[in-house]
Length: 540
Image: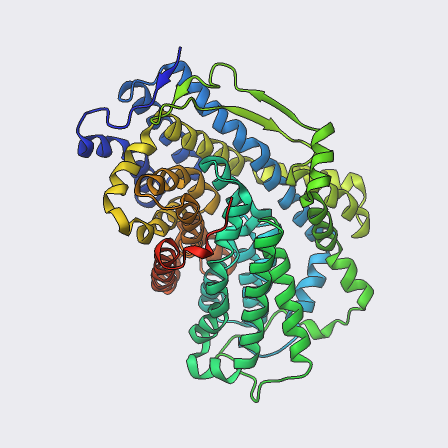
């Protein structure tokens, strides 16, 4: 038996939209007003969506449960598989003590607070977002800056703002992987489209950050260094996202901008060393310890190995070879072709277990190689892995629940109802497309989750108004990055790292105006991409 999706179950679009929006409005209420934990809000929202799908949209109960299960399975693999392995690799580096070497080397390059902010908050934060993600970059970089003597509010605030540049490609590109899976657009064109939007933001962000810290005049004083930081990052982000895919832009751009700025500072120094007025004494002083080149390379070795393996894994011949021996793909029983879309086509429901070619497997291999390189035994590595699983048990549940929620919203037709309403904005929809991603990240704290929630809406709405869906799906990804700095989860992480617990409202006020400013910029960029510079849209 085949069930056909319904778009307007009440034959009154306004009423249908109000009911369809209930699960999303619940998430707003649960996280913002009720301050409910993420996994609790996601599970209840999934239950609400399931009830609406069955009793309002007429979706058979069996199909509804299978849809949620399909989404949860995808949440576990490849998403949680990747997240667990990324955090595991990072934890191995911390446990071995090698991350302390990295921190001290980063802190000892310059005494100027403006340049330290560029190196640590912007470039190093991007590198961490690409490898670990999941809140680690803001927590680590904010703690480092406070340790160096930064004002805690500025340390936490600028780390949140700096984190906008890399979020779309975080955790080895998982936000774009999810956007691809939910929307049906291949990963590469989404990566290319995002990579033709965010580099414009990355280009100006270093100047923007230094202006926040010290004012525009002091930012111009280090203009050459700001230019090197922004241009190197933006160029590498553009090239890697357009030619390598979504897995490595943060790693390559972050490392590249660090190296470029360090080399530049060997030949150029600011006229004056700028520091905060009445700043606290530094507790993290790098130049007390001198590290050899060998020690520095050893400390960075897990991430160097990761970069090499991820590049290999991205090569099509390697991917094809791994899939030839390590791929299990099957039709989801009872769900495959059992739902007819509004356009009359049956929806294919496949589950792909590419356990060898998955990015998470590449990270696992990097971690296994790195364990002896950083001086740990495999027994100690196993203990770190167990601790990582314990650390991530609630995030894993949250991701599974959010993907289950996204799948039932999409399969039941609820997202199509909302898309029909959004299509009413007509030619202006591309301007508002990034706002959906911004809201999604504000709600969930994750660009990955926001893409799971809204990528299908973006796709369907773009099709209905006759523009290329990759523009609006990519806008969801790009808009989401500037919602990260004001999401309650990110604020909590940054406050904890910057010793600002209890002062979260101050931190929110510090970042919120910058979030709106950057969002408006991305909205105008998306509108231009849709109508004025259509040549920028990748073919696929």
